[in-house]
Amino acid sequence: MIFDTHAHYDDKQFNEDREQMLASMQDGGIGTIVNVSSDVASWEDIRKLTQKYSFIYGAAGVHPDDVGDLNDDNFTRLKNILQEKKMVAVGEIGLDYYWEKESHDEQKSWFIRQMELAEELDMPVIIHSRDAAADTLEIMKKYGKDLGGVIHCFSYSAELAKEYVNMGFFIGVGGVVTFKNARKLKEVVEDIPLDFLVLETDSPYLAPEPNRGKRNSSLNLTYVAERIAKLKGIPYEEVIAQTERNARKLYRLE
Image (spheres, rainbow, N blue to C red):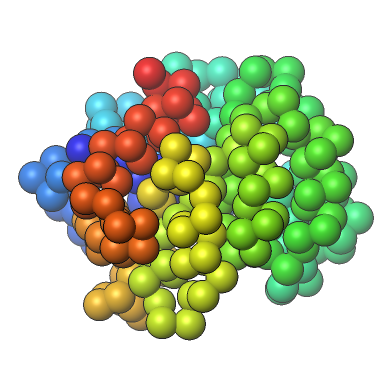
C-alpha cells in the first residue's frame, strides 16, 4: 500500500469534501498518511484527524513562515501534543528564505528550539528548506545529525541529498518529480538509493502531472511512483513496497 509521508488534510481546501476524500483512500491504494502541521492553529485539527481515522498519523511543529506565532506558552503545548499516541514526528520545521515573512534570525531560533525538542522527545523531524540550503545544512549538522527524519519536498542538488542521506535522513519526493523542468529532482531520484526515498504529496499543493495546478491528494501518488520507477528502471510495485518500508522506518511504525 502507498504511504503518504506528508499531507495537509486539515487545510481549508478540503472543508467541503474531507470525509468523502479520506473515505476513498483505502480503495485508491493508500494505506497510511501522516498529516503534518504548519502552524499553531492546525494542531487541534490534526489531533482530531488522527483520532477519527485509523490510517492517519500526525506531526506537529511550526513552518518557518509562521514561527512568529510561537511563544513559550504554546511551545509547552506543542511538547504536550507531541507526546500523544499517534504523533510521530516534529514538523514541519526549518527555514524558508523565499517569502521573507519572518526574519532569518527568528526562523533559525525556533528551528533550533524545535530540533532540541525533537531530541528531548526522541522523535524524527520533518524539515522544510526553501532557498536556504547553506543555513539549513549548518543547523542540521549541529543539531540534527542524530535525530533522523525527512527532508520534505527536496529541491536542492544530488550532492546535497547525499549529505543528508549520510546523516541518516530520507528524501521526500512528490509531484514535482513529474514536472518537465524538474531536472535537479530527477537527478536526485536517479542518484539516491531507493532505500532513502519516501513518497509525499504536500496535498492540497503540488499536484503531479497530469493534474498539475489542481488540488492534490494522496491518490495522485501513483503518478509519482510511476515516475520514480521509470527514472530508476525498476518495477512500479518495487517502488511502492520499498517506499512504504522506508516510511515506516522513518516514523518508527515498523
